[in-house]
Image (cartoon, rainbow over all chains, first blue to last red; front, side, top):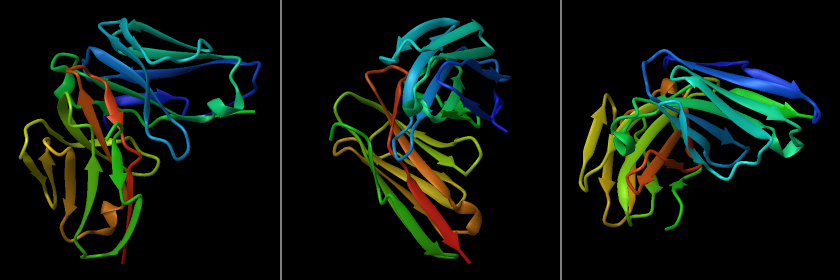
Length: 115
Length: 112
């Protein structure tokens, strides 16, 4: 257990659906992240939040909309996705103080399939 | 090197064998190198963070070294066990920020 939980663990959605992924961390961290892993590709950073403020948007299409209502929760709202968006979506958190040398703590991921 | 690259892509060894993998990363503007262990259906788990050239870290039978001048890190596993089977990821941080750039990982399978 890393102290980072994600729900749901699996999600199947149509291209016209709207769904949300949820991440919760119980570690008292100040920074939270969304990553995407497509088949045979490295983990790719999508968004970074620090103290509930978005500090990085890694050229992610607007059909992905993150929300960080407080430092313990992070959402990824999904709208009109494409089949190529099918991937594993991982959430992570870190203390948010020491930046580059901080360990990031990952959740188990949500496996998303877009039909 | 522009991206983080790991080799080999996959590795099958016998129980008791020692093994090592390589991570190559951009050496310019380098800040830190991270190793993670990722078992199937679980969360990636941090192993080491290294920042200084010549750093060596050890955790049980797993150790890692860092060469920031030439841009590579080695991960060693001594006496591999089946429970060491996992994907080993490395990631580098450049520019002082908290953005990790990951490699595609080395998938290790330890057989009895």
